[in-house]
Image (cartoon, rainbow, N blue to C red; front, side):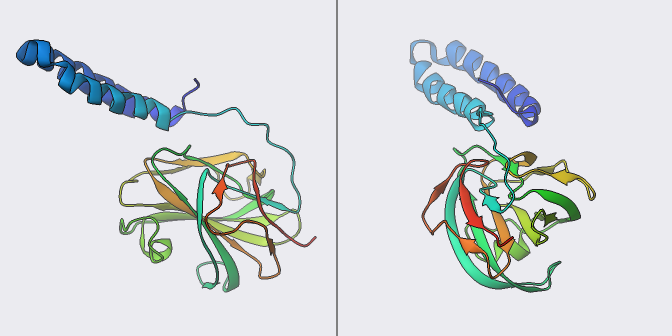
Length: 217
């Protein structure tokens, strides 16, 4: 299994803690050590599972809006986006549990025209106000269909680290990685009002693969 580059520090810390706990358990508990080691081993395995990088065949997309993350669609709503777009949009929000792949991908192809990091709170990621009050990164792309699309990485109650690799002027390719969020969170995508929304609330998405909307050319 291939692991994401963001896993290095976390896995080193988890490995050291696992060895220490295992040694202390065997020394002090002897035959009862398994009562501690089994659940700790499961947690240790979940750390590796969280940072997995699945192999996916990413296609080229022009009009399609691709799911930026693995997760569950929790909101489809008309909102006023007042940070960059300054207009009414359709907001599609996808919540990621700690068991989902947490690679963040461009939802559309085009050019990165805006990026801004916002410090903030750590409300639970499915809370509606988390989109504007939590720690987050906003990124906008001018798409190949000449639309401006904004999307946000949002930290949640558990997620405390947002990583992003793109800069203004970079080429965005739908389905390809631009960042990572550690341990649960959500992604919001803000689309033009005339966008055809294909997904619905409750849908499970596979980042880089599933089409969630289609924009007019």
